[in-house]
Every structure is written in C-alpha cells, then in structure tokens.
Length: 131
Length: 123
Image (tube, rainbow over all chains, first blue to last red; front, side, top):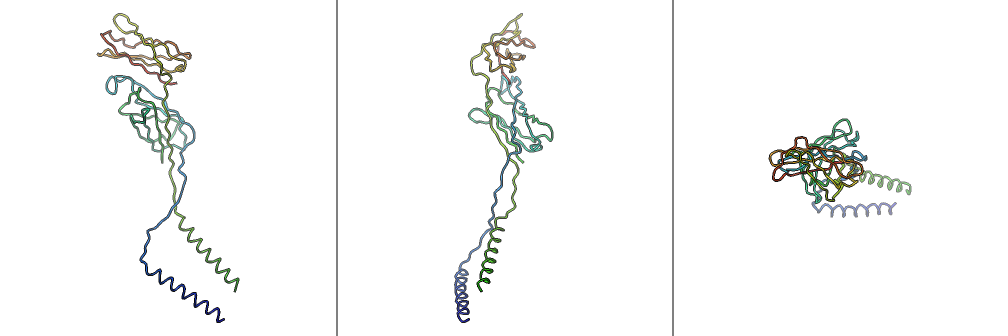
C-alpha cells in the first residue's frame, strides 16, 4: 500500500513539474483542419466542337471568321453549369473567349464569340465546365 | 489492479482517438470541374489551286483544285472581294477530294485585283 501511495505521489510530482514547465510558455494556436475530396468532371463522355464560319470584310478580316461554335455530346449531368470556351492559336494564345451556362436540356451548347475571331488562326479549343 | 490499468489504458487511447478523429472531420465538398483542350485540325496543309471563272466581266465561279481526300465531306466556302463588294458561295467536297467549283451568288465585277478567300469546314 505504501508503495502504491509512493508511486502515486511520485507521479503527481512528475506531472506537476511538467505542467509547471508547460505553463511557462505563452502559446496560442489558430485552428487547423483539413480534408480531401475528389474534384470530378460532370461527365466522362466525349464532346465534339464544330465551327460556323462566315466571311467578314471588316477586321479581323477580310477573310473567314468564326462567330459560333457548336459543342455536341453534352450529358444531363452537366446541365445548367457555368462554362467557358476559348479559341486559341497553336502557341496557346487566346483569340477569344465566350462564357455562359450550359442548357438545362438537350445535348448541344451553342457558343457565340463576339467579336468574331479569324478562322485561319484557330488551331485549338479549350472548354471548362464547373459547378 | 491489472485489469483496472488495462481499462484505464483503453479509455485513454479511445479518448485520444476521438480527439484525433474530430480534428480531421471537417465537412468539405467540391463542385464538379472538367476541362479539356483539343487541337482544331486542318484536313490539309498542302497548296490548293484557285481559278476564277469569268463571265461577262464578273467572277461567276471559283474552282478550287488539288483538294486531298482527307477533305472529303467538308464544306468549301469561297468569297471574292473586289474592294467594292464581296460575294461568295459554298459546295461540298466529294469523298475523294479533287476539284470543286463554287458558284458565286452575286458575281462581283472583275477589277485590277480581287481577293479570294476560302475555308474548308468539317467534316
């Protein structure tokens, strides 16, 4: 019994010293929480872009320009979400950007570019759908 | 006495686990985000021949030749601009390519220099 009481007292003294040392620092902390989640695309199916070209005598013509891009293959899981479409050169320079919201029905997005862009310069298209 | 120590140890570990668990339990969700970039290919980079077919002092049609088979099914659009007015037309390239003649809707008058623009769209 004496040994147990002695052990308890020794323990209390030890923790007391530790707590005493801990109390001698002034330390605060901001909150910290973390989590990880998957950022998924709204659809995995392929989409296809087609171009409507028109002749424009004024700049960026004279020549053929693209004012409308039609994207097909939209899935219902991507309905009513913000999108951005960019037409670019081979070097990646943006020629024009159009934004909007995907339709709530159907499989087609009709994207209008204003101002129109030179058809000859378009060598890449980028699409992002979020939300 | 031993069993009490074990129980105390289990309680301690469980409590620590609960604290650690609650620290990681942030509620976090993400909206969808999908992006893609693709090339806009050319059905040909080879030189094409362009001939203006004149009629009564106007450019009545344009014949575009040496179109490769890879452009088969594409729509060929041609516009002639004489500096005063412009007009054009379109035709579908046959499957094997070759030469395609496009009639100009309102043939512009022949001048010292006309600009002829063309574009192949699709397939």
